[in-house]
Amino acid sequence: MAASESSVRSDGMELLHLYHQNPSIKLRNQLVQLHTGLVRKMAHKFSHQCNEPYEDLEQIGYFGLIRAIERFDPSQGYAFSSFAVPYIRGEMLHFLRDRSTLLKIPRRWQELYNEGQKVRKELAISLGRAPRDAEIAKRLQISLPEWQETKLAAQNRMPLSLDATAVHYVDCQITLGEALPCPRSHILQQEEEERQQLQGAISLLEDKPRIAVELVFLKEFSRKDAAKKIGTSPMTVTRYLQKGIQDLICYLHPQVMPTGS
Image 1 (cartoon, one colour):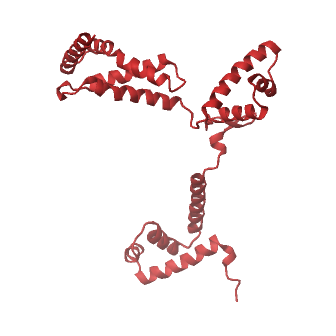
Image 2: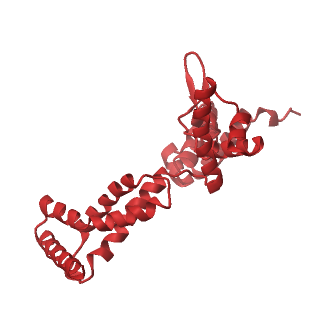
Image 3: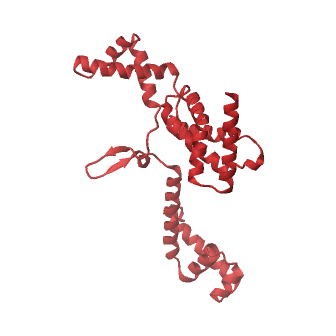
């Protein structure tokens, strides 16, 4: 057996050198066949730690093996198995993360829920109707509250899609994502409303105060440059700005207007 394993390692390293020098699908497939034991061993280990079928884990593991073959450099001098195992494990872990739920429930509850689903089907056939929770709990030999808690925990462990319909009208549907409040959207909407109000108020100003406000506050001109643009002095620009600001306050907040003397 030891001689056989040594021969396999020797053949594998020779093929890895050939593949590294001149990659081809034929050589890659030969290397995959030669190292199936790495994938099967890892799939067998993971299958005892999760609910996914061994066959699915094995198929996913081959993707990791192929990636390892494509990236392995035999000139580095280390064993291919040590290099390949992290790739194979990584593909399986990634697969399990995608398949797993966000919330974990106790193993007993998971087993109880799975058994309850079998009992539900059996009772539905024997009773000719959907069984009640009390009937399922009785068959499982547990209390009704325990079964209801188990069922609720199993059902709530799956995340809701934001594309799920939250409200359904005759001519339109509102998804959960649309129904949920978004603080950022609310802030952006409020900023847009304020910007439109400000633009509307600026448009009501007299020409020269409006031009001064737009140049200094919107286009960030210096007062000296704004004065050159308007054809007046910086002091006059300052007076235009003061008048423009006072008028804007009156337009935007009419309640603070002086009541007159």
